[in-house]
Length: 216
Image (cartoon, rainbow, N blue to C red; front, side, top):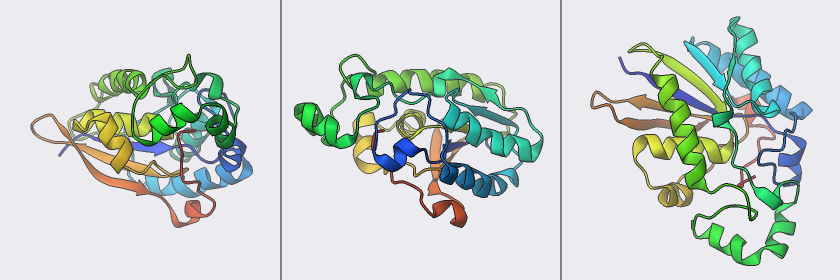
């Protein structure tokens, strides 16, 4: 059997609902987000993951804890699975960013990569750190092991693309972002490479109110 990774996006926050760029701002789950995590956790618990690792940001950590508490398993925190740092855009609405940074907003639509908000990260920066975290994690899994990584919209997509060898620009343009509290599953092939087996799965209960992500 193959090693497997489930990449699970955190539940909704008030910033998600309001269309505000979060980046690495440490925003807690909203009531809706907590309900989403509680609804989704049993669907992942039946898989009996060997390891659960989350971003250390509160919204991801709380989502992961809903699964860890259900299984009686300690959740690890790893800052390498944090969301993209969006620089000056953090705390601003999408409309404000488009108005103040129209050129960058257009570049983003075409998949061009650049440091967000002036001094933030690029997607390439994010891909480098999440891949390093994933390699360390996979190295601790048994041959048929499963790990759940609780992360964020941009970070999870960047990691999936890196693992399967998909250029980040292409991933940006062709892979829809994970909705709040939805996940993707990747399996390692005998060659050592990876493939995406499922994308944007979620529990029916978690679907209600789940935001379609922008890069926020």
